[in-house]
Amino acid sequence: MSRPISASFLERKLRSIVGAGGNNLLPDLADLKGLLVLESDRAEWQRAGGEQPAAAGGGFAAVAGNTSVVQLRNPVGSGVLAVITRVSAVLGAAGRLRIWEAFSIADFATVFVTQVNRDLRDVVTVGDSLACILTGLNSVGAAGSGRNPLGWEVAARTTLEMIGEKDEIIIPEGKAVMVDTTLVNASLDVNFFWRERPIEGEWELR
Image 1 (spheres, one colour):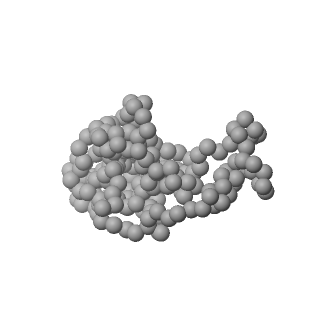
Image 2 (cartoon, one colour):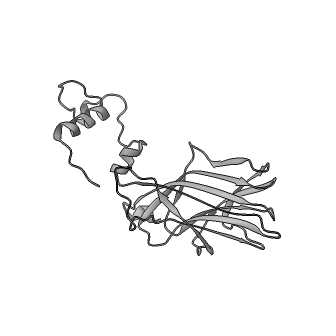
Image 3 (tube, rainbow, N blue to C red):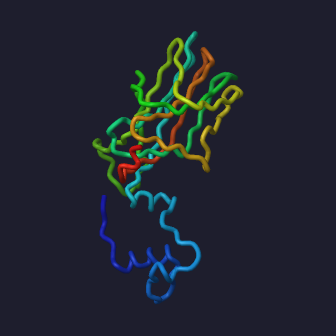
């Protein structure tokens, strides 16, 4: 939901960014000294820049003989660049967790709900959507695939922060990130936090 803003409100925001106080004229770039913040990680500024923060979780109960994998995929032709900011996982028994960089592949059979981390001033509508798709599979031999897997041995029911506050994974169109376990008959729960924004140029498609 859009709302009008006054010129004075916009000027105050600009002054807070560039550090111009009082009634001083807003400076030219050549007049600025020190650090100039061109982008901010504050959620309200990301949203104003067209980014859509999102979150989703998926998982499976323990099934005898089965392993599990959960995947976040940015489909080909989505028109967005996705950046994972956090991944956490919990394994129901002591064993190994892995995270994979994956290439263009199909979605798994189970589709989980993705949720926009929205501005609460907005009205939630049925048409609101995200490009990335969270899916998973629990079956005999279910496993991640791709390159450069990272693995951890974890205790039962211990939350593992696989991607932390200072780490990010970029998912271009047609790529995915998977979390799996090599352990059979164990529950797996995975939470993804990410943001999406429109692709700005051909170079971001490479």
